[in-house]
Image (cartoon, rainbow, N blue to C red):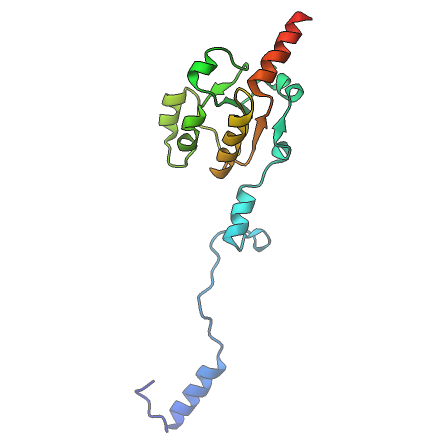
Amino acid sequence: MSFIKSSSPLSLTLRSTLRATPRPLLAVRPISSTPAARMVVSPFLYEARKNARSAWAKEPIVKYEELKPITQQPTDEILIVDVREPDEVALGSIPSAVNLPLSRLKDALDKGFNPGDFQKEFAFSKPTYDQNIIFFCRSGKRSANAAELANEKGYPNVRNYAGSWLDWSKREGEDKDD
């Protein structure tokens, strides 16, 4: 405003008009078409909602009684993942399970890992972020680590078959004897 003399009547009118008019600090416009009631205002809330577990994953431990029917009628909705190394899997595995060794899990579930490369390396499609996943190993320790890693990578619907292969093979052996 240096081009207007400070003592002129125009400058006094202009100054009083500028002071009286509220000016926004930033231009505000909607980022998306999401209704205001559903908009997430915090990156922390966004992450919390994005990684919210489904009702299926509220109970983090899967038991044999729940897993058995899933193996008898497999669907794309639930992926059963054996995190043991291939030489261990060769000795036996749970029906309909796929193998993704814990040693490769962190890299394989990374957002930057190409789905085509995943398919070539592991012989099954890369899990989607909203897919239900059950991890198991020999005794349940590695599968618990796998569930935690998957959750950190953005897979909220993960569970652990804590009894894992030892429990499965014992129960299946008992079933065969009956």
